[in-house]
Length: 595
Ligand code: ADP
Ligand code: ZN
Image (cartoon, rainbow, N blue to C red):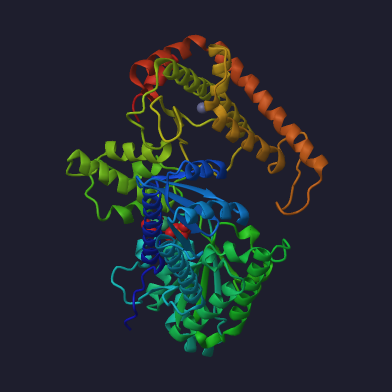
């Protein structure tokens, strides 16, 4: 079956519209400029001055253009005044009459120039109107190509072998694939056909990839659409789109319909009274109706993905709808290695570059991050003129992903570099003193992204459980920069604002989510539920207590390691970036033999 591969339809049209708007604006501006310069010889005066010109006998001819009187002098210059009073106009006209000079009356008819302007405006308006109509038409369904359709027999398409580290999810999907291969047989055997599957998990973990691969394994078309595309500017259109989506799906069946980010349309209904949420409710209702509507044997499986399963409307997960939830989590170290293997297939790796080593150094990386890491590493390798991807390229790529790109050419003056070095050294000192934190990996005062400096720590292993001590250490480390500013520079910088934001967020979560404060295990419920102001106040208070305690702790550490910090600052001023071993040296910590 050869299905058309449909391209996004709006981009080119948008460009066209933008271009024509610019062109028209340019034309209007030019026309006005023309009008201005050519009217330069006209002198705007008041009635008295105009009278003076006339009385002095300078007037050669007169133009009466509605309320505007234009007196032309013999030398070609003109003086004009607005004279609303008919009697006053009469006065001037009389002088010209007496001298038997030309008087010209003009009706209030627009000039050629303003004529042209009017036409431009009219055409422009029509254009805009046409564009709007066309957009509405396209979104109602005339445009076609609104849902992305992938040919089942597509060659570059993914199979289960391309999705790694998510074996459980693959197992759960295998039944669905059986069903799609032969929906009728499935019904005869009495199996309850899967209808809706919810893939939930953080972004970039391969949910889309899984759904696509499932369709491919079953050799059926894959119809994909993003949940946010149902948020329409015009009420009712979202529901109409849902209807059309399922109409198309029924025509293509057996097939897989994939709704990415279903939370955009599947939020709990009946929240606010505004019209946008009312429209969203209508769209969601339509989705529920459609899902209830198709028969067992119809062979349409809807797979939806979300990273916020908690905010979905409960009606979505009732039996017969998205009644199967598959959680797709971040991969562990073995999963990461498997994902890296998938993406390394196209690359030439140096013999000493082990994927296991990369996997160990990338806890918390999603599948998408890992793909990106290898891609960046390959780019560095190419730029290096290297024939293979080496460790150094991977390390460079990882730093870039974790800390942002170095902003070379952005020069800080020496004072700023010094202040940044002290700030970062504060993070390092507290990080080294904190026994539950992650090892410090690198510190740098080369500006990257929006940050002036970076202290980078890397977990030694995946942290599945975060203990209270670990969280407290994190807060202290984040505040270490500010502590150093206060004690060693006797000032504060705005550069600490991001640190503070993260520290407060973490402390607040400790209080309001993890029950790690004197308030005990409390729970705030959903963000849209009403909370008592008294409880919120107590939470803020307890959060502040954690922050103050950790800032005090950070200050104590900084105070007791002034010498070490001074050494680190000197190193940073000298070399910009220090690696783990150099940092340990400054702090007099024994450097273990390289593992
Ligand atoms: P999600 O839908 O969960 O946000 P995607 O499926 O869009 O994530 O993943 C984006 C890209 O990341 C994929 O195209 C693929 O290149 C890579 N990727 C993510 N997860 C995996 C995985 N488990 N195995 C292989 N590649 C993956
Ligand atoms: Zn900082």
